[in-house]
Image 1 (cartoon, helix red, strand yellow):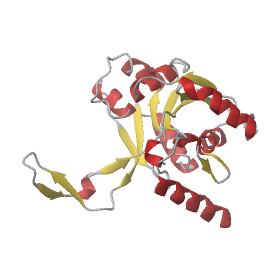
Image 2 (cartoon, rainbow, N blue to C red; image 1 turned 90 degrees about the vertical axis):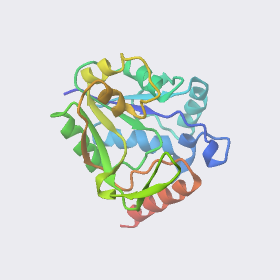
Image 3 (cartoon, one colour; image 1 turned 30 degrees about the vertical axis):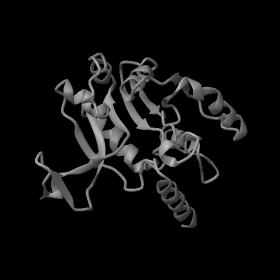
Image 4 (cartoon, rainbow, N blue to C red; image 1 turned 45 degrees about the horizontal axis):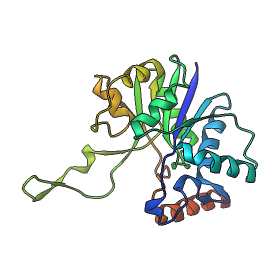
Length: 227
């Protein structure tokens, strides 16, 4: 079965407090985005990898690839869009309408091989699959009147990526007009009436958006290397 992944990396780096887009920041000796691409290549070295970056970042990325000799993995480079929805749509143009396609955040470099296996295996049976983890913190809901109340955290999950789909279903879903209600790729498919299934994610699969996330990611990689 054909497998594809669209890796969407459109961050500006503003929340990291610097000028370098977060996907290019160094992590364990090389840019975050290289770790992310490598995770999918290790899972399936025949996978069709589509990298979506803002057009103004293409030259910088190519310079990084040259600097780090990142030239052993084949992938297609595509322009990003105005929103996450439009970036995924651009990436879909490079994905066949048969098989399975994943959509993944470029700044989630620590997705485990086990999570990838669970997602892709489940997608062979389901139309849409997301990895998710339990909520460990207490949760309170903000009421319209400004008040708040405790809710049962066991009823909630924190959704990660990759979100994995039947390719034909995702192509059909992204023919819908854009809506601000589309908070992730699964919500686009769900808006079409498709049920989204949940599989177990991995807690290390963090999205690196703030300086503390980068420190945590370094610690996770260091811990694995010491084992």
